[in-house]
Amino acid sequence: MTIFTKICGLKDSESALVAEECGAAYVGFIFFQKSPRYVLPKKANEIAKELSRSVIKVAVMVNPTDEYIGEILKDFTPDYIQLHGNETIDRVEDIKINFGIPVIKAFSVSNREEVISSLKYIDVANIFLFDAKPPKDSNLPGGNGVSFNWNILKGIDFEIPVFLSGGIDINNVSEAVSKTGIKMVDVSSGVESSAGVKDIIKIRQLLTEIEKIEA
Image: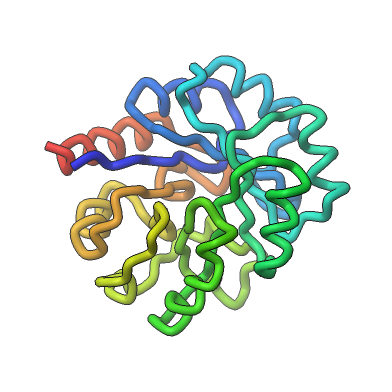
């Protein structure tokens, strides 16, 4: 079993290089200014240039306007745009058409009905990402370090690749993969020493644990 890992919210080269070295297939850069993981597009570009082309670079945005996406793309060229807001089906399709970049559509879910509802996006999204709903006191749509009931994803044919996100770390990644059968995991706060500060030891530990699952 091959597990594809995305280390998200990177802000420095060292963390990104360790993520690549240890087997992360994807890296994510947050272009949402309220997030402690926000990074300037020029900085993200500098970091991305140090990685091999085989590492998939993701630009994470929340309800972005075309103007905002255009500003990001002046300095940073992602392989995917991740939409982590409440973008409609039409909006996701517009972004794909206008910018010619594949889209990861994120959904915050807490029950099976919400997961089923996401299937309406299958024709416009290239990859799904399921995250926990943010705590009431949080103004961040993701990266809150909370998980959801993974059982609500069981037995659903998504037809497209799916990332599992939300509170995943070294202690529960094996259970998350086992319960859901999903082979793509997205981790941000689970490899941090504090909000927005990546911990290279935790990155190494997580990816080593994922290697054990693969074995």
